[in-house]
Length: 179
Ligand code: SF4
Ligand code: SF4
Image 1 (cartoon, rainbow, N blue to C red):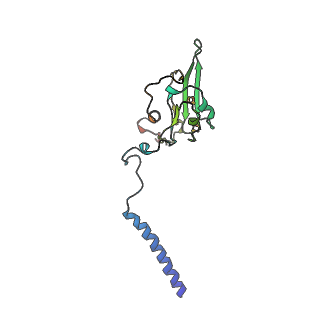
Image 2: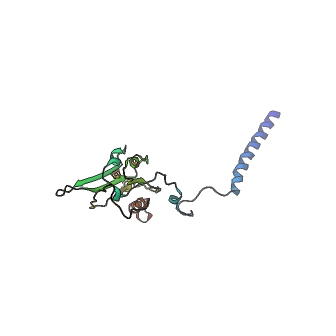
Image 3: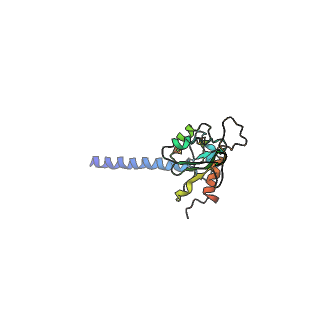
């Protein structure tokens, strides 16, 4: 009988101890943040520069060497290069990155000789329509002359702005295609 009562007391004490820990959290400040609406500044601005978020391409410094495309182990990058029939000049006509397929390993950025392809702190791409996550850094019909190293380039885009613009194109007005 004594051990029976002892077990009841031990169980009750154990439950009370657990409840006391739970109740103590009622009086502490929450350490979670309600993203994206109730934060002081965008999460993207608080992440490290080394964060491996959504890739962007500064096409003004892309040599069209296609090293990033060849290095990617899962074929996320598709670069199209054409040659002008008369001048024989190479032209970049497409630079797509499938952000849904990307595993953010960073190998493409490491292989790039000019830093044209780089990770950003952009990360918000959740959507039920996965096909919308193809980032197109060369627009339809656009033909870009590849960058020649050591030439001066003006007005390079701030890091992250090109990826943000692409996400805006994929999801205008924040529409993630949930409907
Ligand atoms: S980060 Fe990795 S998976 Fe993504 S495109 Fe670059 S090489 Fe491919
Ligand atoms: S982004 Fe870099 S690695 Fe890729 S084609 Fe351009 S210069 Fe070459």
